[in-house]
Amino acid sequence: MAADDLPLSIHPSFRADTIDRLSEAVHTKLSAKITKILEVEPSIHAQGNRFVLPSSVLWSCSYGLPVRLKFPAGPNLRVQFHRRGLGAVRIGKEMVAVNKSQSPMHMGETEVDFGADFAQVAWQVPLDSLERKLGALLGVSVTRRLEFDAVLDLTTPQSLTMVQVLESLLGIIDTGAAGPARLIRSELESALLVALLCSARHNYRDPLDREGPAAAPWQVRRAESYIEANWDQPVTVETIVAASGASARSVFRAFRQSRGYTPLQFVKQVRLRHGRRLLEDCGANLSVTEVALTCGFSDISNFSKDFSKAFGVAPSSLLQGKRPVR
Image 1 (cartoon, helix red, strand yellow):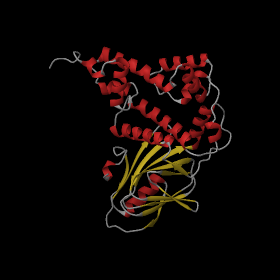
Image 2: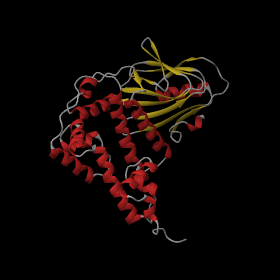
Image 3: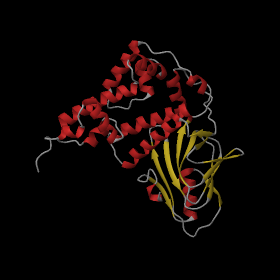
Image 4: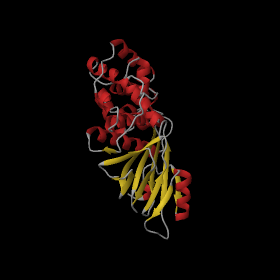
């Protein structure tokens, strides 16, 4: 992967071709400092790309030379995802490798060693955002500070799902799509927060892993009514909790028991119906891609597959005869 192919590449924060410029960028953009340069290069190709989400920030960084950076303690949990090369994080007295099978997670002061070809995606998440999401899942206030283990195992089924969500989010960001894509980014970020809470080891895992009671039938109906009325708005665990008056776990369990599907699967059904209506009513002015994005689908091929399965016809076929003759 070339440097210019890094995720978030169309959202640059800094570029540096000398050590001096890199040091300035690291200080002003990352609030960090270079503590050691392991190999001096006459010219470098360093870059940092940044994208702000509703509740968190994604960074994609590479430096083009072996360097050590020190990051201060702060209010954000930092989760580092490997893209290429060799890198490691000093957390306390332990060195934790950043690779495909694990991600370091930390909030305190840390040092990060970047190999010459190392590139990563760093996710900065305010701890209070995670605690609000956790409270919505549990249906109770989070009174103790949320504390994570220093290493996230990326080989578990839950973590693999989280990585898939991250890749989908990065793909949407790098398309540069605006407008309807905001809906997708918001929901994917929410899914990423939930996936992190369900994948990582932390001091709330025991209550989170316990299956809570199912919501009442009237609460399920309220959730359905909310989803149908707000199909074009981000649907998150918080909005489902607010609409139903029950914890997210309770609503999900009740949906599975009484409906045979999850709330998110119901969201998909509702949006597919609206997608069909858009194609039938506005097909001359909208492409299948535009309809998919408007209806909250990040993957066009999945939209086409789900659409065909639901209605027995491909979305593109509904456009036939609607295009003006040229």
